[in-house]
Image (cartoon, rainbow, N blue to C red; front, side):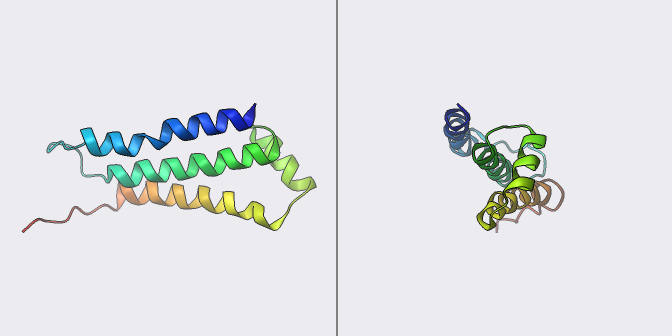
Length: 102
């Protein structure tokens, strides 16, 4: 059940970058990196979904209990994905500098 939910959300979120590129050409848009925010969000959600599939539940308590009882080294990868996604979102919102076209 968690596996099917994770991949359903993955395929829904996988089409969003294409929709942003297709419909996101607005001149009055705020000065944020829409693609960076979107990709960071997708990476963070994929990391959390991978943890949920591995641990057998979406609750942070369930994930913590599973990691506390049986931690293996490859479980660091989803945590790194979550950290990288959050970093990309913060960078896209607060530290985006639009390049001038010459």
